[in-house]
Length: 261
Image 1 (spheres, rainbow, N blue to C red):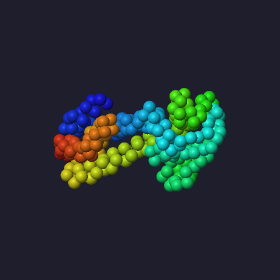
Image 2 (cartoon, helix red, strand yellow):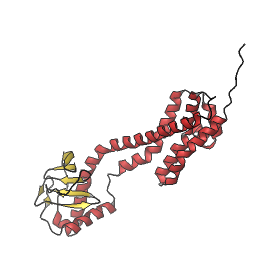
Image 3 (tube, rainbow, N blue to C red):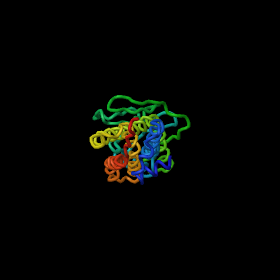
Image 4 (cartoon, rainbow, N blue to C red):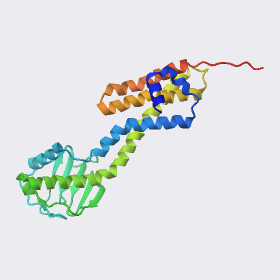
């Protein structure tokens, strides 16, 4: 596997030595690189549910900017008092049944109800669950007064509820990332095959497909580096280099005609 990776990445003229590989082996290699190049995105999704200290401070800041006083408190199992809502980065956080009226289908609302937590897309509930046992109690008034224990309990409560929802979404997000990467890769394979087809008609199409699939190594490696370091130009190069690699590798093939006796 590593030998193929090194050869296909640094020595494209030798890709042709693998044309006798079974398609099953080539597809396995292709899928390995697909998953590897998408891994940074999937890890980002997996860790996005965790609130950083900066996120916690921003939530508290938004709360104070919108709410000056409140009698709302959470007693460990349910909310008691008058509800309210505030906006944070285009999303709404609503408490004890007070839902913003001006929402669209693209608006996400995290609703902390009396005894349950739900997520709404527009007016449609897409997730709902009861609060877990053992949650710390807090008063919003203490949070507004910068009580450290209350602030930690408040942001911990929000993060706990948010994570319960986000964990249900991680698998779907990861599959979407894999699917989009696979779609781009397949389009690129077809594109390279069509371009090379007119130039190398004397080469059997199955050999061209094998070489093109191996030439996709540079696309997956550049996609991986782009996702790791946010270097957009690598993604741009990754769309053109497979054609150059495949064309060069196919041009190195020689067809030997054996005369019939």
